Image 1 (tube, one colour):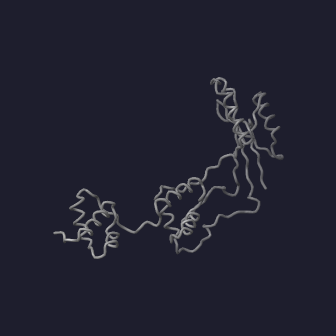
Image 2 (tube, rainbow, N blue to C red):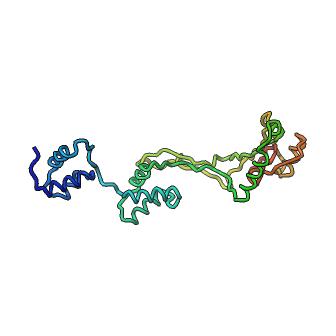
Image 3 (cartoon, rainbow, N blue to C red):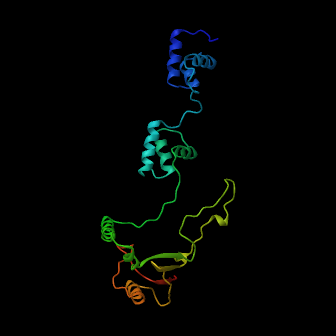
Length: 248
């Protein structure tokens, strides 16, 4: 049976329970009231109420989390270290791992950035104009087109992100390093085309490097094409067929 308490204390318990405060918070606000007594009143007044809040008090408030979410989304805070520094400036005693858990609780996930050409407004306008000019082309029109692109293959490994596994107490080992050589170690530049019938063949250039005029001449000589578009990296399309061997 519920121990009889003064009416003002009962009203305070009911008020705090109504707003879902935890047992520890109510006991702190109302000294001398036991958890079992609060639980009995809860069952009497709010039989359908779920469990009260429990556990450690959150490190940050709802408003602070909202600002962090907005700042990370808009890149005002770029890294976990920036978020931790911001919270410490506000007076929160929060560590790096707790900051990581905070970001994960907001459903943020780490991803590797994708490479994309830097385009100015004028580049975008020209690309859009090119697309609008050719949007009504038929399949036969596109069959006459030759598309090309290039890729760079490094002789001494990729420029991509590399990871390794290491336990906290393990020694730093040789395979944990990403070894480099002076000058990059050399690379092979591959230019190739593709048409409706498939990709073209490759040629190795032994003497020097290929220039734009050489690309155009090669394509014109092999296909009889007369109209060309410059490369994607500039403003349009470049039609080429070649391998450029470039070793430093």
